[in-house]
Amino acid sequence: MDRLRAAPVDQDNIAARSSLGRGAAAAWRSSRRAKVARRQIDWLDAMKPRCRAMPARFVRAAASTARETGGDF
Image (cartoon, rainbow, N blue to C red; front, side, top):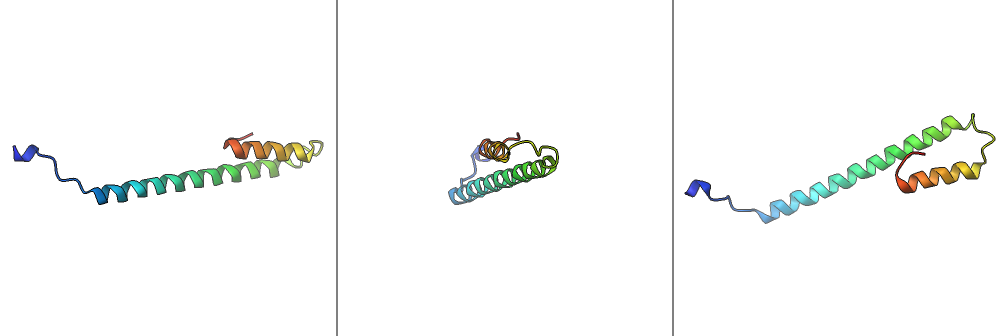
């Protein structure tokens, strides 16, 4: 029966691993947001020559909305 007994739990190790996990997840989200923002900026730069008639405030508003929602526009 000794073999079936669970190993003792190291609470400090669990806390360290979970906090590292949260930090890694936050870093991933942050890098993902940066990647999306770069893609949006690239899109705006590519569209500038094509949409001279589009008011700048519309383009800024669209970029701002996309930034807030985390999506493309």
